[in-house]
Image 1 (cartoon, helix red, strand yellow):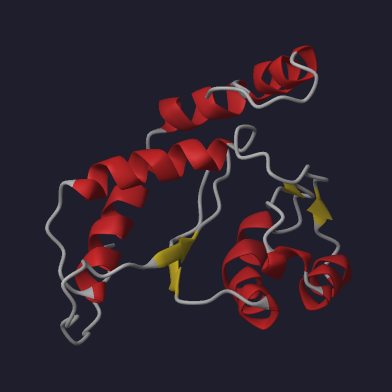
Image 2: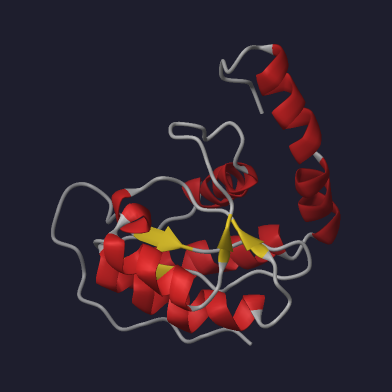
Length: 164
């Protein structure tokens, strides 16, 4: 089901409108994208409540997040602990290990050529690209399959960044 494009006012700047999104990638399914303008602890907890907890269910999966300030906030840590979400310890400044960065790169590549002048158009194009990339099960399986070799490469390089 494709959501209707939200109604927004046209952006009155010379630069294209910009938008940030939150999404989570699972081996067998992914969350919908959540647009946001600023992510603080309370906003992050609201996002996790609406979009992460339903994906995790009672399956006991681990959750990986980067070290963004909202992710490290006391309110987010307390929320995750209260809901017994197992969070994978993650080193700071390690986008080379995070497979979702590959997904964001593909989404950006798809959206880059699209003409979008309003925030609503950007959201719509980005959601379409997200669904396209995350529904490609072979691509997602390959990303998850690359995790052990990524970790080994970082160990071999004594913690230095890798190319993914």
